Amino acid sequence: MASDTSMTPTDFFEVRNLVKRYGDTEVVRDLSFSIAPGECLGVIGPNGAGKTTTIRMCLGLTAPDGGSIHALGLEMPRDALAIKQQLGVVTQLDTLDPDFSCAENLLVYGRYFGMKDKDIKARIPDLLEFASLTSKAKAKPGELSGGMKRRLSLARALVNDPKLLLLDEPTTGLDPQARHLMWERLQLLLQQGKSILLTTHFMDEAERLCSRLLVLDHGKKIAEGTPRDLIAQHLEPDVVEVYGNGALRLVDSPLRAYAARVEVSGETVFFYTQNARDLLDALGIHPNLRTLHRPANLEDLFLKLTGRQIREDA
Image (cartoon, rainbow, N blue to C red; front, side, top):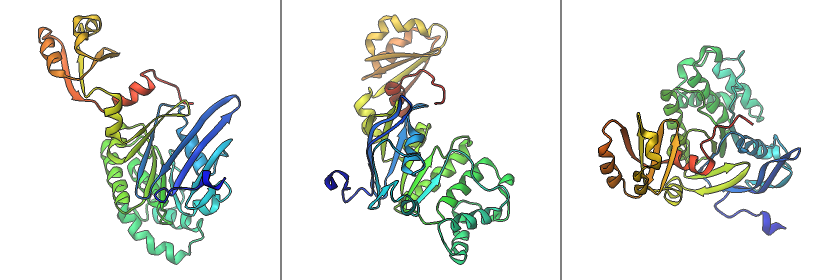
C-alpha cells in the first residue's frame, strides 16, 4: 500500500524489510533503514554481515528477494536508471580505466550520465582540485599512489553532482595520511549537504564521519543509533587494558570484582568498568604489568555486539 512505502519528509532514501537469499542462506534479513539529506549513515559489521550485498541492492546491481528501496520519490530496481543519475558510487575495487588520464577518466565517466562534453570539461578542474590532483590531470592511474587513485575515484563519483554517495569501504588499503585526506574530503561533501551511505571496517572512520550507525551481523540489524548513544547504551564508560607476563591470571582473580565485564584477546585482559580508579589502585600490587586506561569506543562496541572471533570473507 502507498502508506507502507512513502518516505517521511526528511528521508529521501529508504530501505524497508529488505531480504536477499543465496540458495538456503539468507544474507540480508528484514533490513530497514533511511538516510536524510546531509546525513552520513555508516554500516559496520564483520565479514559476511551483508554490507556489500546491501550496497549492491541499493544500486540495482542485485535484485532483492523481498522488501523495497525508495530514493528521491523513485523505486529500485524499477527506476534504477533514474535513481543512478543522482547517485555517486565508490566501490572497494579500483575501476578506473588504466588507459585514460585522470582528466579523461572523469570525461568518459560523465558521458555515461548523458552529460555533454563541454559541461563535463567545465567541472573537471574543480573535481581535480577537490581531489588534490590538479597536477596529475594528464597522469594515468598506473602512475598514481593508492591514495591518489581513491581520491580520483571519489572525484569521478561526483562528476554528475549526485545527491547521495554510496561508498563501500573507500579507504581500505590506504596509509594513515591518505585516509585522513579522504576523511577531510568526505567531511567537505557533508558540509555541502550531500548524503553518504558508508560501509567501513575502520571504527575511527565511522566515529569521525557518521552521524548514525547501523550494526549488521549475519545480515540482520542488531543495533542502530549515533556513535555516542550506542556506546553509552551498550558499554561501561571505562576500559582498563592489562597486558604483560601474568596478565591472564587476573581473569579469575579478586580484581574481577572491580569490573562489570572482563574479556580476553590474545595476551591482553580487558576490564570494562563504571569506575576505573579503584581497579587501577588495586592493580598497583602488580607493578610488572602494563595498563592502559581509556574511555570505551566504537571498537569495543563492535566486538561486544559481533564477537572477537575472526571470520573469513563471505
